[in-house]
Image 1 (spheres, rainbow, N blue to C red):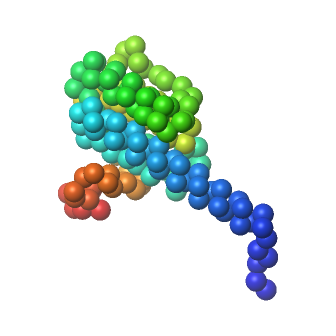
Image 2 (cartoon, rainbow, N blue to C red):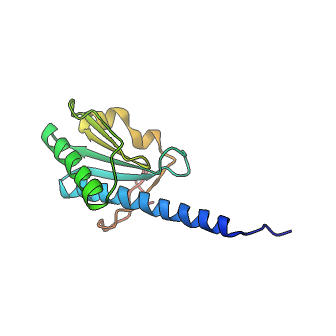
Length: 148
């Protein structure tokens, strides 16, 4: 017997697709803002298959407290002013070693080099897929040195 397809099922599926597209748009917007502010080693991790809590992590490294602040502020500007989203919370801004911006479905981690290496989120969440950044020419490189 085939499953019953209703208008409610179709509507729910369309809403899920739109929400996933929106989350990706926010993650890529944050990554782009970080790139435009000379963020280094920018990675977008697709967390949808791993956890129902959020869809994407954006990981960025900055070289100074001033740069971490600038990246954080530009990401806020992009996501809030240009993409009309609202940040739920921010952590670590004062200390500026690891700034976390929570946009609900997207969580942005802005690290100094030492904190990025110490917490190693890419290794901790190594089962997450990496999203190709559209402005980069080559596909992301995996831990083993091969292209993903």
